[in-house]
Every structure is written in C-alpha cells, then in structure tokens.
Length: 396
Image 1 (cartoon, rainbow, N blue to C red):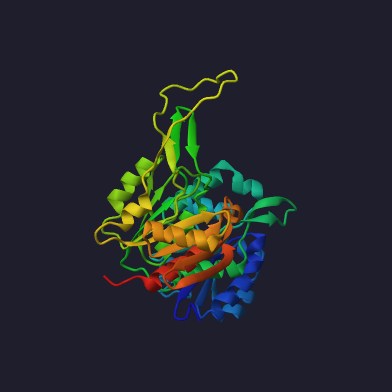
Image 2: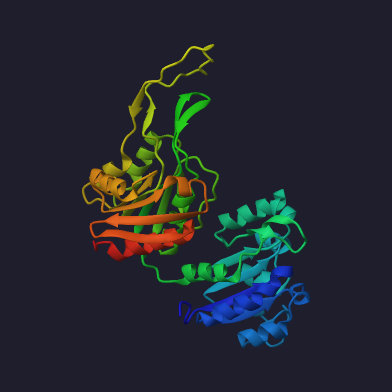
C-alpha cells in the first residue's frame, strides 16, 4: 500500500464539501495511512465527529483546550508525529487565516505550529474563489510553500457553475501519494525548460510558438516531488511556480540559451519541454513597423540556437530528454529528432491533441524502442515520465 507507515493529520473546515472527507478518510486508510482528524467547529455542522471517528478508528479533535492532551498543548502535540497535514475542504475563511498567520482555533494552530508539509484542498463558491482577497491569500500560501490541490470546476451546491469545487477524494489521495512517495531523484539536480519564447519583430510584435507551458511546469513539479533540486527556466506564461522549484524567467531564445548554459553544467538531468522559436528576425526594428498600405513586407529570419543539442554535447552532459510536438507520423519524427539531437530520450505527442489542454497523450522513444505513457492529466504523465527517467538514469 502506497502510504503504509505514513501518518496524516486530516483537517476539516466548514463547507458543504466536508461530506467528501468520509470517502477521503476511507481511501487514505485503505492506502495504509494512519489518519488523525481535527475539525473546526463549523465543520461539525456539516459532518459529525462520530462519523469520522468511526471511519478513522481514532478520537476526533475539535477543541484547542481539549483536556485529553496532558500538557494542554494539543496545537503542538497533535501534529508532531505527522508526515503531512491535509486540510480538505479548506474554506475561503480558513485560507485567509493561514495566509495571515492567525491561530484562533485548534486546526489553524496546528497548521501554524507544524513541522511537516501542509496540503490544502480549497472549496468555496466560484465568486469567493475569484475575488481578489482570496487570490492574494492563495498566492501568499504558495509563496510560503503550501501545496494546493485544486480547486476543480463544475456544478456547485449553491447552483452556480465554475471554479471552486473541492477536488475529488481519489485525486487528493494521488497528490498525497506523490508527496509522500519514494524520492527517486533525491540528491539529483534537474533543469527543465518550459513555455514559448518570443522573438521581437519590433517593440509590439513577436514571433513565437504556441505553448501554454503547462507540460513543462508539470514536469518541474513532478521532478521536485521526486526529491530533485529543480531549476525551471520559463518563457512568458501565466502559470504559478511549483512549490520548491527555483524559477528563472526569460523571454527570447537567446535569453533561454544563456540561462541554460549557466544551469545545465553539473546537473544530472536536462528536460527540454520549452517550445523554442526556431527562427528570429535578423534585425528587429527599434520602432513599430507601420502598415504598408497594401504593400507586402519581408522579414529576414535567422536560426535560433539549438539549446537541447548544445546541452547534449557538453562534456559530462546530463541525461537529456527532448520533447517533440508533431502533427503526424509520431514515431518516425521522434526517432529522427532523437538522432539529430543525439539525446537518449524523446517524449513525443501530437500537437493538435495537447496545446493548451490540461491532459495529453505521450509516448517515449529511446534505444529500446517505444514506451507508451498513455493519456491523462499532464501532471500524471509528468510523474510517469520522471519515474521512467529515474529508472534509467545512469549512476555517476
């Protein structure tokens, strides 16, 4: 069982999604975890402590002043032997408490006094989630290293539709398993490139490739979960940096190349997910190019540096993984790219199936042939990719 020997503290706050905590508790225990439960008073209005005590097989804690704790320090003692604190559901009110360091009840005090990782699964009305204060609080928690799971989009108990639903228990279990699972890349340094590059034509126009950056960010997160020290070199995207990952922002291919030349030497793995523009204008205009009144204009383009090929030919090069987004003939084009770049592994997908989407279908190609990772959420595929890389990574 994936969580055998792991100890969790499951916290519940006062939202309708608290009913899902019963199934979540069952799944965590089935996976082998020891589950201790703490509830806010508001949470007890939605599901009873008796229910959760029956499911967890342990007393449920709700009171900061509970006399069952010998030294009256339950806010410390109840979390000291835990491997992780998971709050599901986490309401807007509780997220605000965490973001501002408030500790006026047992669960908030446990979170503030913790020594272990904190994972929260937000659950609230779509309007509450989208409001500026909530988004600022969430951003602060991410900066503090708190792991967020969700929220998901869909029908809500209030009758409205949108972001704010608590992620389903099975998905939360998968996140906890990834967080507490084997650290296959412990002690390794991994460099990941992600997103597009932008090559200026003039001050307001660029040449670029279509890329959301989601796959690259998922790979960076998966590598960090696997215990690696991760540097993420990112083109311009609207994504949140994964917790524990060092991010370097770049715009052009030349800027990405410079960042890679600094980060790649001495690394163990280099994963090139970025959609680097193949060409750039030879001479970008310092002023906006005006419309030519029906006349055509000509741009002279020059090749950008081949970043992946450069890293692959380094002395003591890291294990290199390239990504190939193709429109047809996946196997043949992936094999050709692997040979051209001289890299051990290519991860390939059909571009029309993945660009901007949250899921993907990926196949790996190496000297042993094809390895199908299947279709699924990009984070899950990233975890499978990282597991594959860890299994074939040569010892140094």
